[in-house]
Image 1 (cartoon, rainbow, N blue to C red):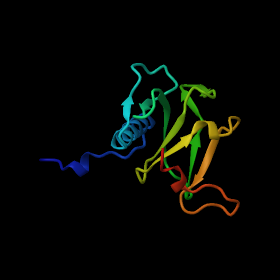
Image 2: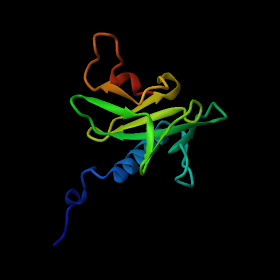
Image 3: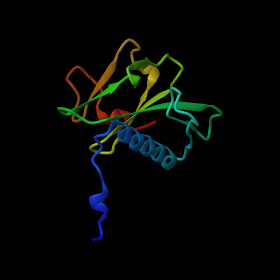
Length: 143
Protein backbone atom coordinates (compact mmCIF):
# COMPACT_ATOMS: atom_id res chain seq x y z
CA UNK A 1 0.00 0.00 0.00
CA UNK A 2 1.35 3.40 -0.97
CA UNK A 3 1.66 6.07 1.74
CA UNK A 4 0.82 9.68 1.09
CA UNK A 5 3.17 12.45 2.14
CA UNK A 6 0.69 13.56 4.80
CA UNK A 7 1.07 10.29 6.73
CA UNK A 8 4.86 10.67 6.77
CA UNK A 9 4.95 13.96 8.67
CA UNK A 10 5.55 13.46 12.39
CA UNK A 11 4.60 15.93 15.10
CA UNK A 12 7.55 17.87 16.48
CA UNK A 13 7.56 16.34 19.95
CA UNK A 14 11.16 15.09 20.01
CA UNK A 15 13.39 18.00 21.12
CA UNK A 16 16.29 17.01 18.83
CA UNK A 17 14.02 16.84 15.77
CA UNK A 18 12.31 20.09 16.77
CA UNK A 19 15.73 21.77 17.06
CA UNK A 20 16.90 20.47 13.69
CA UNK A 21 13.71 21.67 11.96
CA UNK A 22 14.17 25.07 13.60
CA UNK A 23 17.78 25.37 12.44
CA UNK A 24 16.97 24.42 8.85
CA UNK A 25 13.97 26.78 8.81
CA UNK A 26 16.03 29.72 10.09
CA UNK A 27 18.81 28.98 7.58
CA UNK A 28 16.26 28.91 4.75
CA UNK A 29 14.72 32.19 5.92
CA UNK A 30 18.13 33.89 6.04
CA UNK A 31 19.02 32.60 2.56
CA UNK A 32 15.69 33.89 1.20
CA UNK A 33 16.57 37.30 2.69
CA UNK A 34 19.78 37.28 0.63
CA UNK A 35 22.34 36.46 3.32
CA UNK A 36 25.19 33.97 3.02
CA UNK A 37 24.63 31.33 5.73
CA UNK A 38 27.23 29.12 7.41
CA UNK A 39 26.95 26.22 9.85
CA UNK A 40 29.57 24.97 12.32
CA UNK A 41 31.31 21.67 11.61
CA UNK A 42 30.97 20.38 15.17
CA UNK A 43 28.32 20.26 17.87
CA UNK A 44 30.52 21.71 20.61
CA UNK A 45 29.92 25.38 19.85
CA UNK A 46 27.62 28.06 21.22
CA UNK A 47 26.26 28.98 17.80
CA UNK A 48 23.93 27.10 15.47
CA UNK A 49 24.37 29.29 12.39
CA UNK A 50 26.26 32.33 11.19
CA UNK A 51 25.39 34.72 8.39
CA UNK A 52 27.02 37.56 6.55
CA UNK A 53 25.28 40.64 5.20
CA UNK A 54 26.43 41.74 1.78
CA UNK A 55 27.44 45.19 3.04
CA UNK A 56 29.46 43.94 6.03
CA UNK A 57 32.65 41.99 6.43
CA UNK A 58 31.86 40.10 9.63
CA UNK A 59 29.83 37.05 10.49
CA UNK A 60 26.84 37.47 12.78
CA UNK A 61 26.38 34.50 15.13
CA UNK A 62 22.95 32.94 15.72
CA UNK A 63 21.59 30.62 18.39
CA UNK A 64 18.32 28.98 17.28
CA UNK A 65 15.55 28.16 19.74
CA UNK A 66 12.54 26.08 18.69
CA UNK A 67 9.54 26.77 20.91
CA UNK A 68 5.91 25.72 21.15
CA UNK A 69 3.43 28.37 22.38
CA UNK A 70 1.55 27.92 25.64
CA UNK A 71 -1.39 30.17 26.63
CA UNK A 72 -0.90 32.65 23.77
CA UNK A 73 2.78 33.26 24.53
CA UNK A 74 6.19 31.79 23.90
CA UNK A 75 8.94 31.40 26.45
CA UNK A 76 12.43 31.58 24.96
CA UNK A 77 15.19 30.04 27.11
CA UNK A 78 18.42 32.04 27.19
CA UNK A 79 20.63 29.02 27.79
CA UNK A 80 21.50 25.76 26.10
CA UNK A 81 21.17 22.37 27.76
CA UNK A 82 23.34 19.37 27.08
CA UNK A 83 22.39 16.44 29.24
CA UNK A 84 22.38 17.73 32.81
CA UNK A 85 24.56 20.77 32.04
CA UNK A 86 23.13 24.21 31.30
CA UNK A 87 25.18 26.84 29.49
CA UNK A 88 24.38 30.57 29.63
CA UNK A 89 25.75 32.66 26.78
CA UNK A 90 28.20 35.46 27.47
CA UNK A 91 27.76 38.82 25.81
CA UNK A 92 29.62 38.71 22.50
CA UNK A 93 29.32 34.94 22.04
CA UNK A 94 26.15 35.28 19.99
CA UNK A 95 24.60 38.21 18.16
CA UNK A 96 21.07 36.91 17.61
CA UNK A 97 18.58 34.49 19.05
CA UNK A 98 16.39 33.17 16.24
CA UNK A 99 13.12 31.75 17.51
CA UNK A 100 11.30 29.14 15.43
CA UNK A 101 7.66 28.81 16.52
CA UNK A 102 6.69 25.19 15.84
CA UNK A 103 2.93 25.69 15.47
CA UNK A 104 2.95 28.62 13.02
CA UNK A 105 6.46 28.18 11.55
CA UNK A 106 7.08 31.89 12.21
CA UNK A 107 10.65 32.99 12.84
CA UNK A 108 11.57 35.81 15.19
CA UNK A 109 14.95 37.51 15.53
CA UNK A 110 16.02 38.95 18.88
CA UNK A 111 19.25 40.95 19.26
CA UNK A 112 21.08 39.24 22.08
CA UNK A 113 22.61 42.41 23.52
CA UNK A 114 19.09 43.81 24.01
CA UNK A 115 18.18 40.92 26.32
CA UNK A 116 18.94 41.45 29.99
CA UNK A 117 21.80 39.07 30.74
CA UNK A 118 20.59 37.97 34.14
CA UNK A 119 17.33 36.62 32.75
CA UNK A 120 16.83 32.90 32.29
CA UNK A 121 14.20 33.35 29.59
CA UNK A 122 12.08 35.95 27.84
CA UNK A 123 8.37 35.79 27.20
CA UNK A 124 6.63 37.18 24.10
CA UNK A 125 2.88 37.46 23.63
CA UNK A 126 1.63 36.11 20.29
CA UNK A 127 -1.45 38.36 20.01
CA UNK A 128 -1.22 41.98 21.05
CA UNK A 129 1.04 43.37 23.71
CA UNK A 130 0.55 44.10 27.36
CA UNK A 131 -0.60 47.58 28.34
CA UNK A 132 2.81 48.41 29.80
CA UNK A 133 4.30 48.62 26.30
CA UNK A 134 5.81 45.16 25.93
CA UNK A 135 6.78 44.28 22.40
CA UNK A 136 4.56 42.42 19.98
CA UNK A 137 5.54 39.45 17.87
CA UNK A 138 5.71 41.69 14.78
CA UNK A 139 8.56 43.66 16.41
CA UNK A 140 10.82 40.63 16.00
CA UNK A 141 10.18 39.73 12.34
CA UNK A 142 13.09 41.71 10.86
CA UNK A 143 16.79 41.12 11.14
